[in-house]
Length: 479
Image 1 (cartoon, rainbow, N blue to C red):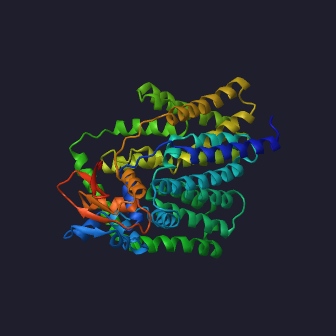
Image 2: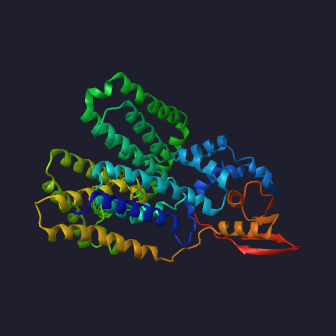
């Protein structure tokens, strides 16, 4: 057995390595459409802002700079669909402080991932104490392709994951340590922060709520506990009251998705099949990543079921089984919720790995806790214990290294590269094909940078005016 002191050191080293991985990767970065939406919203620019310049052929950067305020960030968020308000506001102030380069936009998500790792380490210590399996849990999370991918995505997923993990810490403390109103208050505040960062994080919050109601019952109705819950509930209510139009736009977007999908076949079995594959990935049975053939999906899914059953059998105490059930339920919450959304909508839009971001930390901890229960039990022999650890840990780490070597970075928006060139060559005038191009380009230039944008709708290029000459630069823009 590894001593407690040595375990602590290994856990800390593993945490530091995980944080380093988040900071170092990826080796390259290109943005895609959804990321441009986040960039623009954080600058107070919505999808219809270009109409302000419908009658103009020349617009100065000073005029565009006036859009960059908190009021417009809120309006842009509502006009998008009301989602990710907290993320947009935080990104707004973060870039005001540190600049508008693509690296800064990405850094915000990286810092959210690092805080999420710190919160996750805290949660692991609550559940696993000083066990070496905290290092296993951290390794499983840090090498998870969804977690790592979202750590450099200019979207709200990592901030939401950070908030739900912090919420889980205080949920655990309230449920299993002491019924302090302060814990309930912090649980509520971080839960609201998660939902206002990304609405889909609600599937984790629903599990917290269900456990609180079932486990604490009348205890929640104590005056101090009611007071602790009142502030977070009120904050959420105020936002959703004001964001009514955003929710309406989201509903309209969903109807459009439904109408487009109506002409396409929809299969219940396909939803179940994809849910099994994605759920297995969350729980580190990652064999489906090497090819989603039926046998790989079934094998991976059965591995997760087998791990749960073996851990259940290995648990020596009732409380251990309760924790095992809680962690597996939190881990599977995303898969179940997203499958239900597919059934309700009649299309597969919810079948994206990134939507699992909020349950991935709990699936990682569930696997580590299951391995911990198996390792310390006398139910299985040493060979079976070793095999269980290897089957879940080694393929996850191997997949991470394979993905980290990928060099496939397609340029979908050339605006990030043009912005670098403008600053490097001190360009003060540029010809653009569309006002949307000017808005995105301006969001990537330093605050206060002086430049004039000239509209030439007939041109497929950016044209940079410099030293009496004009350089035409190809435009890449995908939607």
